[in-house]
Image: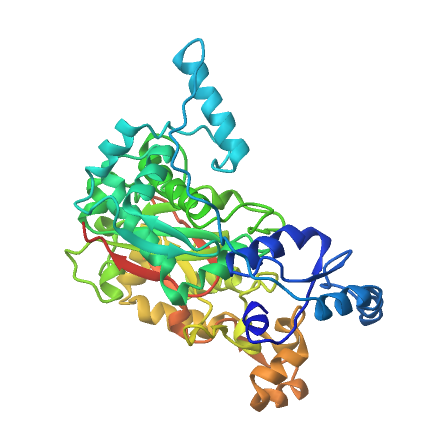
Length: 448
C-alpha cells in the first residue's frame, strides 16, 4: 500500500482496532507514517460474509476520507539515534541494577527476565570474541529496518548473559535472519508464535560449550550456553529489528519458545554425517542454522525396534492440521515479491541418538527417513482443507481442481520429502522432538 501511494494510487488500510498501533508503526517504518486507516472493531478472520460486509459498510466513510485526503510522507523514518550514556544510581549496586532493569523493561528493551548491565567494559570484553570492527554492519533487520552492527549485537549478547565465545555465533544467526528467503518481516510481525530455532554445528559450538545432549533445550548449567545464545537472538530481534510485542509482533497467544531456543547437534552420537555437512558445508566448518518454528511435539517411543515402526509414530506428529504449515503447499508457497523468492514449509525433527541408531542399524540414512515420512504422513484431502479457503486452492493450483471430487484421497502434509529436516539431538532414551516449521531453514558459516 505504501508503494501504491508513492505511485499516486490512493489506498486505505482496513484494520482491526487491535492492530492500529502495528499498522501505524509499519507505515512509519516503510516511509509513509500518515497512511490512512479504516478501523473495524475486530479482525475479519472467522467471520461470516454478512458480518464482514456489515463491518466494512460501517467503515465506508473512513475509506472515502482516506482516499480523498492527501498523504504526507514521513520526514523522519524510524527512531532517532540515542547517543546518550544511561546512568543508574542507587543506595548500592544491586539497587542501581534493579532500576536499570525496570527502565529497560519500560522502554521495551527487555524480554522480561533480568538483564546483565551492558556497561562499556562489558561490551568491550564481548567484542574481543570477534575480529570484526565494532561498526561493521552485519545486516538490516526487518520489520523496523534496524542496522545490526557488531557493537549492537555485542550489547544484546551482554544483556543476554553471553560471553565473547557467543558473539561469532550470534553474528552468524543474525545473518540467517536477514537472508531474504527467511522472510523475516512475516515471522516477526505475524499473529503466529514464530520462534527462531537455532542449531549450531562444528567446533565453535563445542568451544562455546553448547549442550547437544541431555536436556539440550532445557534449563540449568548444562544448557546455560544454549540459553544465552537463544536469548541474544530474541533480544536482537527486539532491539535491532524493532520486533516489539503489540507494536509489530502481533502474536495472538505467544510461546515460551520465543524466549530462547538454541542447541548444538549431537555429532558425537550421530550415526550419520553432521547436519551441516548434509547442507553442503565441510565437516570441519562451524555453522549456525535458524529455522522459524511454530511449536514442538514430543517424539516418544520406547517400544519400537524397527525403522518402519518409528516412522509410523513420527508421522502422527506430522499430521496435525491445526498447525498452519500442514499441507500449506495446497494453497501456494509463501512468496516475497521483493526478492522473487518462494519458500516451502519445512519441519525439523530432532531425532534422539537411540532412535537414530535404530534407523542406521537397518541402513537407513536421512534421505530414506524423509521418503518414508513423506509417504506415511498423509491425510484425506477433505481433512487437510478443514482450515483452508477453497478459493486459495483454486488460485494456487487450478490444475488440482479435480481433488474436490476425491475428498478421501490421502495427500502428503509437506510438498516434497526434503521438507523434513533431520538432526540428532538429545540424550539417552527414546524421546525426540518434532518442530512445526514456518518456511525453510537458513544456514550460515561462523566466519570469525
